[in-house]
Structures are given as structure tokens and as C-alpha cells.
Length: 434
Ligand SMILES: [Zn+2]
View (cartoon, rainbow, N blue to C red):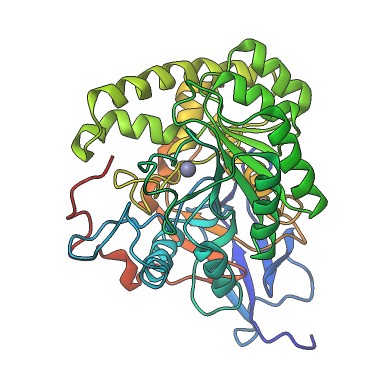
């Protein structure tokens, strides 16, 4: 094959969970050429597994084969993990140091079996740079689809610096308080190469901080530039308005009731509840400086989100899986990316097979590769994981890379034992910030 110097990879035997939602089947052979799957099922007649120079055979006997996991909500450049002696403001210090730390974070994510992530917001355009560095092969990491700074108004999440500080350069958010400012910011972010726009309403959903006409204007401008739009929306009103404005997916929706979910279902907009963060904050938040008042908000939102998840399933709303890993010191890399499917099973009434499809097939949409990723079938990109235990028997098998036997990304077997596996000595040494 001209220009093709990678070996053919063949995965034989094992149990195939293809990510489409179809039941598991015995795997005969998955043939990978270059970075794509050539065939799934019967071994093509021209592939000779005994030809060891041309064909690399992986024996998956006793293992489970799945698409690489996708975490649809993971932040890389918020300045986590915090490191005591490094000067920081809200976690970040300067673009250079933050970029290097983000690169390391990305490697930890990949080594836990997560081959793609959507990054809904970061500092400077570090995530864009990291995405490109991984794409051209400067370093190993997951596929990245990313936004830039959150677009926020006064009172939105992230706008919590004192007014005399304004919105500092290292901030995760950028203030845009009217339609003109928002359109200008969308254009600036598109010029800098983002894959999608992230808007952000209020922190816990108690007030609605972005007007419907602002949402509509952002959606129109972004879509004209072929960029999608999502929003941090925990509130009922903001969730309804986001669906009506034609945003592409909605993050959280904690406080949405049956009334707003009817609008979401009618509009056909997918939801990404991201309940992993709420659950984990309730478990360990007090150890990371989250006070009782904030934990009360989180408990209220969790309780509401459980009902929202059940209702969304009943309405046939597409559910996406995200965790908010890297949003704060309590959300470490490489550990929580597959907790959301467990939540779908335990609280949403999903089968493990459906939960897996949510974080592979469904999540391919937020990477912008819904026709190329997330399902193991001929023609798709070869992002594959092998597990030594059955995730359909216990969905927690997916978590933290504990049962990971192999990660293949873009047709290449990844090294799971890199330096990023060990925590830097000073990680998490700094006191938690609110
Ligand atoms: Zn987030």
C-alpha cells in the first residue's frame, strides 16, 4: 500500500462490545490498518496472521474489547494539580507552565483508557495548542476537541473576582455583557482555533445570567463559522432558553423540571449531566475546602439531577457522559473519567451496555467525530481498549484504568507506563481554593 508503513494490527478472540449498543459478541478478528479499522468479524483472505513482518497479532483471549472511552467534560488547563511552591492565581501561573502541566494531565487521561476528551473551557488557548501538539505527534495524548475561555456575563460562574480586579488574563472566563461583545468574542475564539464555544450561566443555577437573545446570537455566529456551542447551565430557565436558542448540547441541567425537559426533548438537544462532579464533591468536598453552604447547594442539585436523569431517559433525550475532571483539586486526572456511566446505571436506570454506548457512540458527537469515532466498525478510527474483566457484569471495571490491558489510539498501541503515572511530589500540597 503506497505511503503506508504502519504494520497491520489484528486483534483476535476476546469479547467485543462495539459501542453501538448492540450486545457483546465473540470476536473473531478486528483488522487495523494505519489509524482506521479495516474490518470487524471474519479475517479478510489477504491478511495472513502468520506473516509476522507485516502483521502484528494481539491475542485478546479472556479479554473484553471496546471503543476507547470518551470523557465529554474534562478540563486540562485550569492549573490542576496545584503545586505548593509554584506561584498561582486561581490555579494558573503563566501560559508556559500551565501548558506543560496540561500536557502531563493529558497523558494521565490517556493512560486510564480515555482516548478522547472534550474540553469545555480553559485558560488562554492552551487546550488548542495541546490538541494540535497531539495531532501532529509532538506528544502522546487523547484526541481533544476544545473550547476557549467561558463566555460569561456579570454574575455568571467564574465572574467572582472583586470588581476592582476585573477579569484577569489568567481567568477561565471572559466577560461579555451584551450581544455585540459576545459576537466579537466568538469571532476571536474561532480565529484562535477552538472547536466549540462554551457559554456559562450562574454557578449553581439560582439566577439566569444570559439572556435568550444573547444565546441565540452566539449560536447563530458560531454555527455560521461551523463551530458548535455548549453551555454550563444548572438552572431550569437557562436550560430551557439554551434548548430554544439551538445550542448543540447542554451541560448539567441539574434543576430542569419536567416542563423544561419537554422543551429539550422537543428541540432534540443532548444533555450532559456531569453528575460525577456533584457526587464526588459530596463525598470528599469537605477535605478540599468546600464549606457547608456550598455543599448544601451541591446536595440540592444532586437530588434534583437524579430526578432529571430519570425523566430525560423517559423522554428519550440523548445523554452524554462527562465528569468535570480537572475543574478543581478534588477532581484528579486519570481516576474519575468513567464514573459517569456508573451513575447512569445506578441512578438513571441504564443498562451497562447503554451506559457504555453513552460514553462512546453518543460522546463521539462532542468530539465532532460522530461518524468516525465511538463504534468499532469498518472505516472508523481505531481507538480501542482491552479490559481483563467484563464491564457488562460490573460497569466499575471501566474506572481508573484498573482493568486496562491495552490502549490503542489512532491504530497505535500506547505505552501505559510513562512518567505521568507517578504524581509529582508536590501535587495537591497547596491549600484548596474555593
Ligand atoms: Zn466544567
